Amino acid sequence: MSLNLFNVLILVGCAQGFFLSILLVRSTNFRRKSNAYLALTIFSFSLNNFYYFLFDIGLIKIYPIIFFLPLSWTLLIPVAFYFFITYLIKPQHQPSLIEKLLFLPFLLDILFKTGTLLAFVINRKWLAEHIGIVNQLNHIIEVLSMILAIALLGNGMLRVFRYQHNLKNNFSVIDNRTLGWLRNLMYALLTLWFLWSFPYVYELITNQFSQWHHYPLWIGMSVVIYWIGYSAYTRREVFEPAIFQTPVKEEPVLSEKTDDHYQNLLLVMKTKKPYLNPELSLEMLAADVELSAGYLSQIINKKEKSNFYDFINRYRVEEAKELLANARFNHYSLLAIGQEAGFNSKTTFNTAFKRYAGVTPSQFKKELPSAD
Image (cartoon, rainbow, N blue to C red; front, side):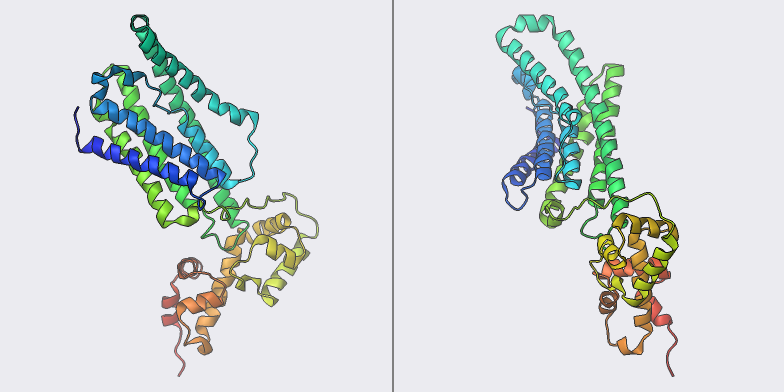
């Protein structure tokens, strides 16, 4: 056997992945359908890496049966991740027949690999005579895995981007609802896809296999597992069931009374100041102006050329500017000013203020004319 720093890192990543999979499935704190599929994704990653570890240390040369073990679950990883995203965004999702059929390639692959394993145990001579066909089928399976992975990853990215867009049309505070962390994870998975596909295609063309070509992929998979494990302990909201709500769908048609509804909206914003509520949502504001949420969203989009999130936070920034300029609030901290204006965190306050006012709250305060 040949141990080195790289395959030891791979092995440690596998161990953490198996542990995290068990944690996600068994812990009552994380119990949710989306997390079950996340656990399946991590487990498949780890199992693949463990198989490559056995190959890399040369154990397969001592025990050739390892080569035929059904430990490479490349066809399951993208499917499990697809359902993780699906149930994360929409917990009550009911899978269609086509979605259920996504598991079929993986099941056929397991049957094929189990068959070759039995052939190795029962009739090695027959297997040796047909090993060329077996290798060709393995290559086809690998290429199909790449195609399936990029297709489902692309689909997932589109849904996450759409979800992020819809969030700003429905919520005035998105800090605890955003899927930015998932978007970054998908970028990492896209990088892994390139590290997987390009060396493999090169090897198919040149017919030269090199383990070093795959170290970036194997170690990258371990890093992704580390990242998910770190998130599980430091960003618990990622795994909480009540965070991600399906945004309200927009209604595409405006009525002839749109201008009247818009003027009423501006009046409500001026007189009732609903934006001072840090948890204000589109549905809550729609109730105030006695319109459907979808219709109100269209009015804001068309009349303000903005989404709900920006529309509300512009009002909050203007409120904060008035408070900063008011001598009665001189003893307030910047955080307190932000909270009075409807912001729920200092970071959100500073980011929004900089965006809409062009300066930070502290700079704005310094540039105010001093009273003589």
